[in-house]
Every structure is written in structure tokens, then in C-alpha cells.
Length: 214
Image (cartoon, rainbow, N blue to C red; front, side, top):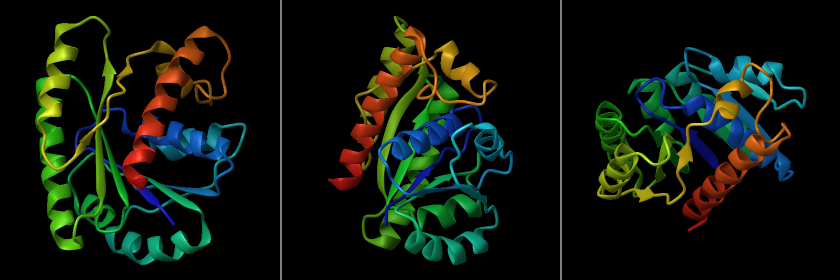
């Protein structure tokens, strides 16, 4: 069954936020999902514990444990979704040696673009070992509308080779930032701001599925 790893070596890229929202999005489509928190900060598992509508999860942060457990878990669930650590550690390498899709969020800033390039380099190493897997999707996250920086960052990411650059951009929105504190995702919230954020995330995840299934 498909395994998706959300990875980026830089903290603050929005990795856990994307992973939790993707989990809820898949769950809303009646997918049997297990969320694996492989990030030492445990942001996603703390978030998942606060959700009113439960998403099953496990915390697995040791790379050997991940390589041992992921094959077994993949047989028990329709989908595995893994929130990787904010570092290019052995844990990240273990995830890329198993995942079907690596989803890489990147903020529109110079240091983040460099970090994304380092993550892509690690993905390429895994692809060389595995004969092309994992499939990889890169996208711009937490962008600010109407800024030159957003446009420049998008143009730079489009030049990254061997990965799919998703057209959908996720913009910086207070409703997304606040959803953690509310013990919810924007898919659980009402109102216009939540609806706008939902549409962006829905578009992003549909594009990611096209990469996975392509």
C-alpha cells in the first residue's frame, strides 16, 4: 500500500502541518490510514492527540525500527503517512528507502531553497538505489501573496531536476497557523478563511496523488 513521507531538513517549513492536513484529507476520502511520527519534536503526534475525529498514529523515530516496522504496517493499512524529521538524518534516509512518494514543502526564502536542494540530493541517492523510487513532489509553502520573493522562489524551484514541481502554492494563512491550537485542521473548521485554505490544500493533495499514481 502507498507510503508517503513528508520530508525537509529545515525546521519551520510547515512539514508537520502539511502531513496532518494530508492525513485528514485522506481520511475524509474513507482511506484506512496510519500516521507515523518520525520527527523528534513530535509536533504532529501532539496535534493528532488533540483532534476530535481520531487519526490513528504511532511514534517511530529510530531508523532501524522504521525499516523493520514500515513493511509490516504497510500490510495492515491502506495508506501510511510519515512526518519525517527536520534534519537529513539516518531516519530520513530510512524513510526514503521505503516511501513511494516524498513530498517536500519549501518556504520562499534563500536558506529554505538551499535546504530543499539538499533534501532533493538525498532523494536522488535513494532513487539511484531503488531504481527511481521514491517519486518526488516539491511545492512552495507558506508563501505571501503578491510578493516578488514568491515568484522568484517558484521560478527557482521549477529548475530543480528529477522532481515534480507542483503548480499549487500554499499561502501563509492565519487559519492554518491557528488550527494546531484549536485541535483541528482546516478541513474541520467552518468559515471563509478555512474554506479558502481547504481549496488550496485540496488542489495540492490532488496534484500529489497524480505524481504518486503517474
